[in-house]
Amino acid sequence: MKIKYNTFIVKDMEESIRFYTEVMGFEVESEHNPHPGARIVLLKGEGDTMIELIQNTENEPGLYCIGIEVEDVKATVEELKIKGAKIVMEPIPITVGYLAFIEDPNGARIALIQHN
Image 1 (spheres, one colour):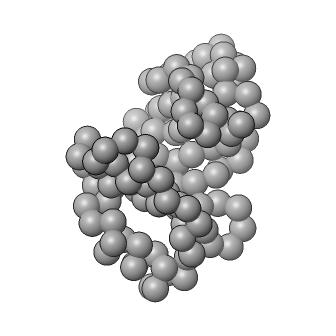
Image 2 (tube, one colour):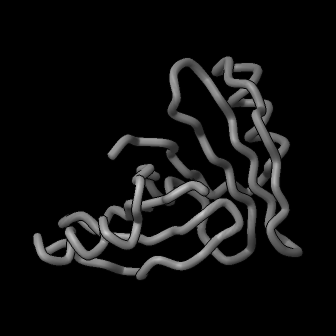
């Protein structure tokens, strides 16, 4: 498993993009509009880990989750269940592959993502 991204829910996408690009030195890698009212921007810095900014009306602003890339999300979830992990969302198909969520003992969300 490798940390792929840290996801933040933002109130103002343009203000957040300016902060992460002009102040922090990240570059916009891609932008997505998965459905009306939702906007996702991926920013790249040094190394492989990215910052994912999401603006929508469904979630409160702040750190949303840490994203970990896995080769096989279904097998990973089954292995984590056996080890006692709290699964909060079983794997579902998404535009880039599959996604599942687990929770650590403190309630922090961890996204498990399998890219196609």
